[in-house]
Image (tube, rainbow, N blue to C red; front, top):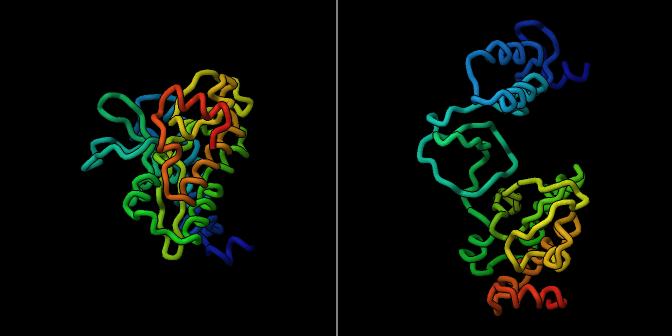
Amino acid sequence: SPLLSRFGSCVECLEPCSGFQWCSTCEVAALKRKFSEWTSGNMNVDYMIQQTQLLSNDGVGYLEFIPFEDFEHVKYIERGAFNCFGVTRDPTGCYMFVTKFYEYGNLQEFLTKTMGCLCWRDIIDMLWGMVSGGLERIHDNGFYHGNLHCGNLLIEEHPESIHLKISDIGLHGPADGTGSGFYGVLPYVAPEVLKGKGYTQESDIYSFGIIMWTLSSFVPPFCQYPHDLDLAKRICDGIH
């Protein structure tokens, strides 16, 4: 079978492996036997983690609960991102996703460090990575982000390219923008949101446009104005 020729067979049950060194039957059974050995302290969180394990077809496609005491040198970086490895709970009782560490920080920090020394290939790689790595996925699932700005775009550097990964994934959907209220970094907020319409997928695209402008000019948006009510009025009036 295609699976057998690609991944070989399990040394225990001799069935085809569904992933590299991963037999869905044996590995999932082993994970299931350990359900009684851990708990997050919340039945709903436990159920979510268990379902990712029961449905996993490879060794990286599931979550696990990681005791907070297993971590060393804990430091707050940014809120929520993709590439999630597991779930933990801090001493205050707050649940957190365990994600990849982005050593280059966020886009705002990266632009400050590089002093605008980026070629157009790097800029296009960043924007492409941002779309394919997050925004398109959020919108395709019927949600909107609602708080896109350079401070919550994390830098992921590859041997031949630089990508942006979206953090602060609150998934503020649904996509019809039924929520109300204003939050976010003012220069990146769409005029219709400032006028009280609420966040939508379209307002995400406006924020993405401001990020594009920032990357191409290497200048923070509306840096010549204080970030106050007067700037909000200027944005609503169509200032660019």
